[in-house]
Length: 388
Image: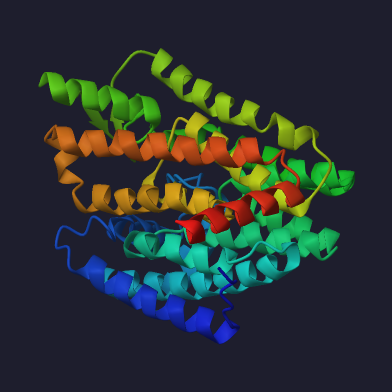
């Protein structure tokens, strides 16, 4: 099976058309759950543009550079009303997603991962109905733009762009591990400094007060299993709502999430010790990102977009990741089933999370394989497919 070549024009058209279809799909849901975050973003922007300062006299549950897409959407017409803001935010997100696709196309040619762009587009399509109305496409773009700058030897620029990603969501700082392996120690230290700064803001009292966590986040692995058990028993789910939805339970539920995240991280040990190769590094970054998400006390649906570019590395990871992203869309469109204790909804959430763990384990464990071995494995799989 040959490589599918896609020009910059085709990438742009595909993503614009897919984004338009995603926005139309989102508009079909009258409960606005898919575009619901736009309401929160617009409320924050109205307060900020009236003179309030985030973290000072305005509870702001995000890292500072998440202000960029929110503010742009406000300035290009979103200040009129909620519908205008949602439309403007979707437009901003479409531009960012197209730019991300073009960056991935450059990365594909730079590190010789066949069909990376096509697989990423395939995996991203199910996410568009809700990703268009959230800020996480901005963070993915910053992470990948920083990576391509690092690949091209633009050390200062890569530090600044990856640092911006850190100050938007934190996780792009994981690329510092790769730069350390490459021998770019001062680049790794610079990215690490931005990462520490992001965690300092994240753990600060003003931001913690704005997020107001009240238990175990329902979408985490431990939270989903707890919800499934209670829904099967027919007992009280004991859900708590603040900036997100949490499930009340013992403290060790958080430890379960950390343990599974650590398992993925340990699976990357071979990749951490192996000599530097770009194919390994792409998988290593994916494994570390999955480990961070699973270990985190908070797993919002759109976080699956963080892993998607790295899961597009080969067919096996793509086959595992596609249901993760599709199930995430189904879970959001049927969000009310969570509060009603519907067993199938909680079972689907558990399955989504287990598949996500499998993707992380696969990427982490395969990050220790050499590029030639990975290429040979891919050719054997293709030959087996033709033989059948």
